[in-house]
Length: 248
Length: 315
Ligand SMILES: Nc1ncnc2c1ncn2[C@@H]1O[C@H](COP(=O)(O)OP(=O)(O)OP(=O)(O)O)[C@@H](O)[C@H]1O
Ligand SMILES: [Mg+2]
Image 1: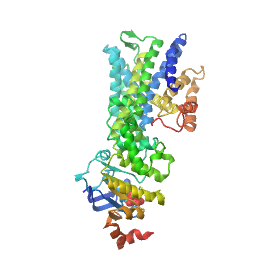
Image 2 (image 1 turned 90 degrees about the vertical axis):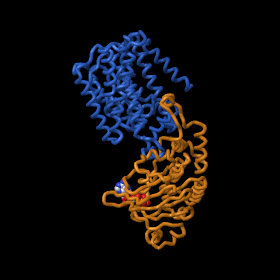
Image 3 (image 1 turned 120 degrees about the vertical axis):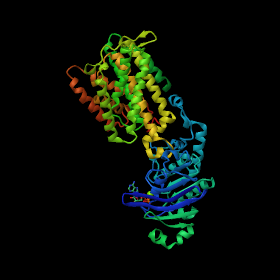
Image 4 (image 1 turned 180 degrees about the horizontal axis):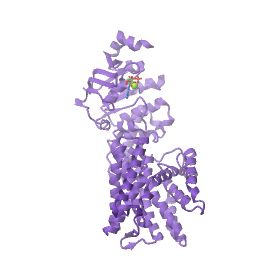
């Protein structure tokens, strides 16, 4: 298993944001986590990233992540995107993506003082170009993200998460802000990423995207897991329809 | 053409003391400006690049200055050794002051660094060897390789060398891997951690670097002004250094140099009788810059040079 959540529980005061959640994400799959606003999806990501205190256990490739600091996960080949963008706005799209390689590039105090720009190296540029091509940002590498549409900024974050050949990427509403055509392309992108051997844990409100590309779906409501299964099982599940899908 | 601008500037700088041979007081103020520029360059890295804040920056100048002066005067250590020790001790204290920064942000960090600065200067004042309230007098001029930098003119070249070092190191650091990591942290701490940047380490690095520059400035200050008093390194100077950095333009290399010259000359060369107004004048300049030139005076330079395309130094 790529990722296992065992009795994961997160409390904020009296609020139980995630309640004894159990699930496992199989290698090489697209696994979606869905549910209404406030269900606890982002909180699950934050627990995995050790950003909120939790009980229970989280295993990544069989190893417990308890006590592992947030910044170590990239090196362990897990990356994520954020529901609220966390881009580097003083830098170009190219640098935003290239920073995803921070842990892959070695430098020393001497090279820092000598002013060696490690991100201008050919192999870095090639890796950035490759992922930019995949995500469709090739023409925008020199742009500053603040000037791009919200959906495109989300893609920059996706590219940053993909550039270091992660084993597992957690995506928090990556399709938000994309129009219908872009969403079709977006599905293609994620399927290609999956073909490349990357496991994806996806939080997404757009059911078109979720149903079309997920191998497995976990549904949460008020911190509880209310269903889990294939897209077809989930879309036919009466509990899910009542809690979430029936809303629209 | 662009390539030759620094060389032209350097030649001009080297000629300045010769041109102003007859006005040693002017050269003295140039020296002072450069010393503050070195110190402010550290603050520039800390704030402009690292996104941290310090209201205790001047205290590190005191640590560097007093360490070096005491070593030379009491232990008769060679200047170069004293200089290294002054910068080293300043770095060590920078590391210590950096730890609160791991837990504090913004307003709270400002208060914590302010408190640290006050504590440091207070302790220095209470050590007998530093001359206490009277300050430390007759600090010997810098001596390197058998040459004594006794006059303002000769000190000009030594301090210029220090400033050039500070500028080159800053410029290089900004485009290095660590410099870019710091800028990423400044832009988004969560984003930085997600790409694997150990933000705690980089914050400490920012504080250490900032104190190294301040320490160097302090050493040069002590041995060229020849007098040290802790009251000169209190909150007042810390805030002025902050203003210099903001007026010049945070995150740019040349801005703080501009800001320092402006500050020293506004403060010292205004006609007599107008001294009282210098604080007001500097305050007004600061206000105007914050309101109209968020990237500082260097923004004007960028525009004039036609290089200003909304592009940041960072990339
Ligand atoms: N740091 C926090 N402190 C206190 N409460 C929090 C915190 N983070 C989240 N919550 C609360 O926990 C619950 C779950 O929030 P979470 O952000 O995980 O929901 P979500 O499923 O991601 O919702 P959305 O679809 O709107 O993004 C909400 O009630 C939220 O208000
Ligand atoms: Mg959420």
